[in-house]
Amino acid sequence: MKRFPILLFIFSLCILSACKDNTRSPLEVRLYNADNDAVGTATFKEQADKVTVHVTAEGLTPGFHGIHIHEYPACEGPDFQTAGNHFNPKGKDHGLMNPKGAHLGDMPNIEADPSGAVDVELDIPEATLMDGNTSLLRENGTSIIIHEKQDDGISQPAGDAGNRVVCGVISLDESNQENKPTDPTEVDKEEEKKGK
Image 1: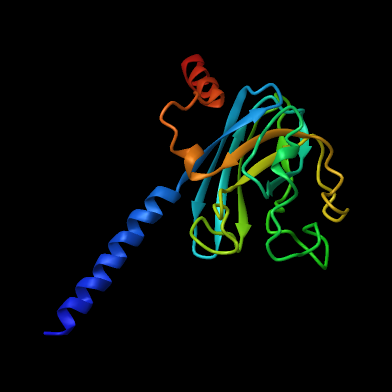
Image 2: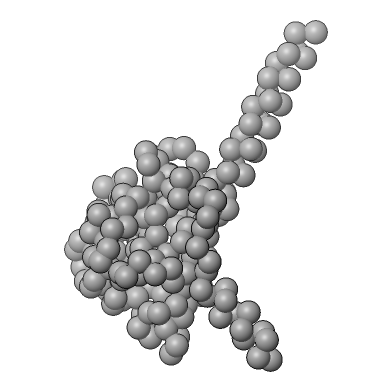
């Protein structure tokens, strides 16, 4: 008979954990340019040993761009310096090609097409949306930044990727806002469907 309350307790914890997971993953973040115009979204999903992020954006210069997770949930334009440095809870050097790296927030470059649009999914190994030192939501959250140039994968402290041109706040508060602006990339996709 003593097993029943223990099993009930364990079952309750599992239910609570599942509810908690649903509020954190998937987590959609709006992306803004230096003029505070919404230019896309980043959707984060919890996986077994990583977080995946699906980025859609427009208005970029065609070509490659560095993209990183930064340490603070702040996107004050026009330069987005309030986002701080790269998210680096393990104290590594910068760069996916650096033998002493990489920052947890380092990701592969993304490529904007000739129209300036990007639609890509990236992995953030060892990151989580749950609690812990490597959580993108620890304390008040973090941010995602797209840079004007490509990250060279090794230069300190940020890969010589140039100015910060797009920013999105990664936080539960930001994700739970009721009146979210529309995603301009979705409008463009609907127009393309109508044109076919």
